[in-house]
Image (cartoon, rainbow, N blue to C red; front, side, top):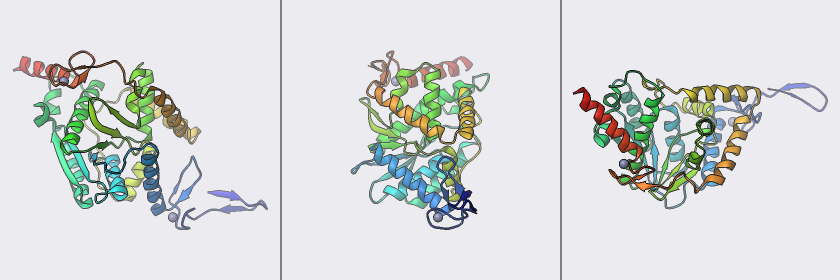
Length: 322
Ligand SMILES: [Zn+2]
Ligand SMILES: [Zn+2]
């Protein structure tokens, strides 16, 4: 980094702004230069501020952390454990085994080993035991892997995490969505015309049907900084993505926002603030009024919730093949 003194001399700043140590990372949007250790400390501190600003975790809470075994969720578990637990606030790591042969086992292994290293309970729930089929079986009848595989899987994963959080007696469940995920979802909701669903992006979301609050403590941290935190913390994580992954519109939105950030450093932060401002006006109105699902009793807009509707579709396809 180059700076000019009052006398016009060019000087090179070659040390961490915080401790004077070896520089490792420059935050482009703020110009801050940090060594590896101060960088990691800054991520912990940023997370603490996000949690406190949005009242995500309060005294007396019991925390569940959704841990897929990827870089974001393992980093989240590490940061939240260093900030709050497990002696101050009971923490349970929750992993969902979707049942994808040859893919899920590695990530579950990382989740297990990091949880045990941190002294945190680890619970694994599977699609098979919860819904009666694995993701492999559920998608077996489909001709091609497309965007609907992800939205299909997302509906079941959300329900699985919810049920595991209730079982582990949690009052709050944290997911590892970072700033990039957050603003991408915001933009995609706008592009899909799903304005009523913006309420779901409330930083500390809860509704009458589900007593456990859902929070995103990394929502103010750039994806690249979470990745860097994982590397610098030497976390073992799975970098291969799910074989069914097909992001469609999301990857275009991601590329667009990354290009914008490259030419206008900090623009993602601005977009996050705008999103929060819009969402605050929508919180409390989470879409159409709901009626209980005829199958499971969870809220639905049509009398059958999306989990039970998709479950019935899978069972129908499995039967028709037999
Ligand atoms: Zn430093
Ligand atoms: Zn249902």
